[in-house]
Image (cartoon, rainbow, N blue to C red; front, side):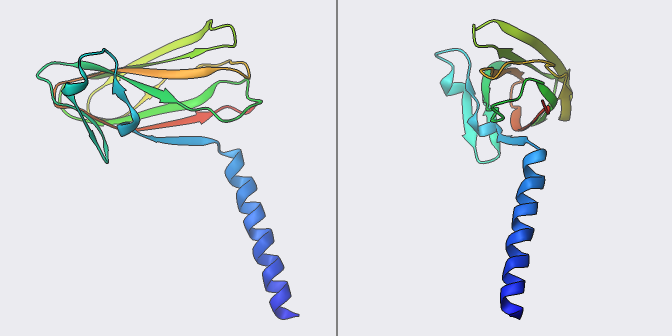
Length: 152
């Protein structure tokens, strides 16, 4: 009887933990999933386990796909954070496209090394897709992207 009770308690705990995790719908994206924006510049980037590094002597653009997985979400994002290392200034923009491929919003930010925030896109439809574009300084590495979807 005691083992059955412990087993049931364990299952209930896992279900509650799963429910709590679903409420905080955050995506953590490795910068290594980003790629060169312009064809012909693929040789200017080094994909590393901790991000994508610009090996060129000048700034280069990267594109990062942002996966949103809340099908019924129409509230946009509640935060977008980017972490990078290097010198100079990195700028990033995030844009969303609705079911008709109409831009829902374009938000930009730039900052010195470390974490920085991009303003939220405040609306979307259930077919929205997102992308992020960054100008990565020479020698800079885009390490992480954290995105959280708004509750509908």
